[in-house]
Length: 637
Image (cartoon, rainbow, N blue to C red):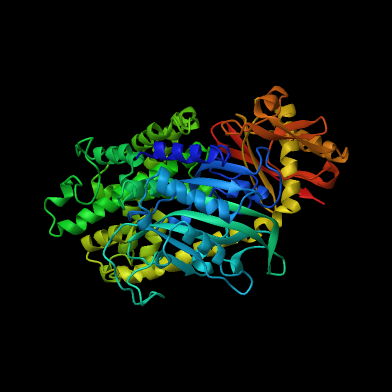
C-alpha cells in the first residue's frame, strides 16, 4: 500500500457516517503564537486551545494528516524506524465521544480497512498512579473486541501518559494531558529475553528494545490539566487525541520493518544513490539484503560493516533532507538560531554523511527536488516556493563545504602550533574537548578527526571518550530545549495573549505605513517579546518605525473592542480579512476584528479590548530573508 492510499483511507474512514468527522488542513510546521516549541511536533499541538474548551469552527469531531518535526529524534535516525519529519494521522473528539467509541473505531480501521492481522496487534494501557486510576475501562473494551489478555500490557507514566511535555511531573501549569492506549504491530522476530525488562517472566513485550514491535497507533484520553499547585484536575470535557505515524502504518501494512522501504522514500533514495554514480533498477526496493554494491565496498576488509554504514548514511540523508526541505518551505533560513539552526544542522549532517557515499559535489538541491516531486500533490505550497528552497539549500551546502575545507586547515594549524623552531612543542595528543571543538565548530565527526590526526601521527582519545564529551553537550542542549517548554500554556494566559493581539495591530499599521504588499510571513511569541516577519523589500527607516509605533499605540489608547465571528473562508476573504499567504485553512474559520482597524483570520487567543495592551515599542528591525523583514517588539505596562 502507498502512503497516499493509506492517508486517503484514514480520512475517508473518519469523515464517513457514523463517525462524521470534519477534515482540517495540516497546520504550519512552524507553530504560530506558541512560545512552547520551535516546531509542530504532534497533531494535537495546533488544537490545544480547543482541547481546553474553546469552540472549533468545524465542531467537535476533527480529522487530518499533520506534518510534524521532532528534533529530539535526530540522533536516532539511521535505524529502520526513526525519522525527524513525519506525517501524523489524527482524529479528535473535543468533548464529544470517548473510549467506548474511539477504541473500536481504531481497531476497525486497523483490522478491516488496513487488513492487519488481529493476532499481530499488541496493546498497552496506563497502569495508574495515586492521582489517576488504572485504565481498566480500556482493557475491558479491548477484550470485548477479541484482543486476548496476554497481548495487553500495563505501563506507567513514562510509556503510557502523553502530553507535549512528557510525564505529569514535567508538565507546566495549564498543560493538558492524559493516559493513552497504544497499538503495536508484531513484526514476528525471534523472541528474546531481556534482563533489564520488567517482564522477566516473558520473552518479549511491546516496549522492549529488540525491534520486534512497531508502535503504529496511540489513542490519548486527554482529560486532565496540570494545576499551578502541581496537581492534576479533570477537564470539564473529556477529549480524544489520536495519533498514528503514516510511514509506520504503511510499513506495517506492507509487513516490512523498514520504514525507508515505504514508497515515499524511494525517489529520494534513488536520487541520493544516483548522486555518486550508482545505477539502480527503478523497480528494485532498497533494503539491507538487496542494496546495490557501493564503490567503497570493493576493497574493504570489513564489507558488512561498511555496508551497514552506507545504509545508515542513506537513511540519514533521506530523512534529513526531506525534513530540511519542509522547514525551508516555511520560509526559514539556515542560521545559528532557533528553527534556522535546526535546518542548518540537518543539511550539514547530510553533507557529512554524503562523504560515506563518495559524494563530493553539491547534491542537496537535487534531493530536495525529489522530495517536492513526492509531496507536491499533498502539499502544493512546496511548488510555489521550490526555487527559493533550491537556492537556500544549495547555498548552505556550498558554505559548509567551504567550512569543511577551512576546518582542515585550522586542524593542521592547531596541531602544529608551538614555539617557532621547536617541533617538540607541537601537539602529540588531542583531548576529547579538542575533538569536540572541531565537531561543534567545523562539523567534524569523530571519524574525520581520527583520520586527519592519523595522517599527522597524532594520538586522539577513544570514541568512547569523545562520546562522553558529546553526551555532556547533548544534556546541555536538552536542558535548553526543556527550557522552551517551561512557559507552556501558563504564559499564554495573559502576556502572550496581549502580544499576539498586538501582532494584529502591527500588521495593519505596517500596511498603512509601507503599503498593502505587506503580509505576515510568520510570527513567534514568548513571554518577553513578539517577533513578526512580513513581506517588504527594504530596511525600515527610523521615521517609518516611529510611524508604525505611533499608529499601534493610537489604537491601544482608543481602547477598541475585539470581536470574533465564524465564517466560511470564502466569506472571510470577501470581507477582506487578512490571511497568512501559503497557509491552509479549513472551510470555516474564526475572523477577529479590532474595531474597524484590522480584520484577520486567526485562531487566537486575544484580549477583548486594546486598552489592556499597554505601550507598544519596537526594539529591533532586521532582515529575515529575501524580501522579508523581521520586527521584535514589546509591551510596556
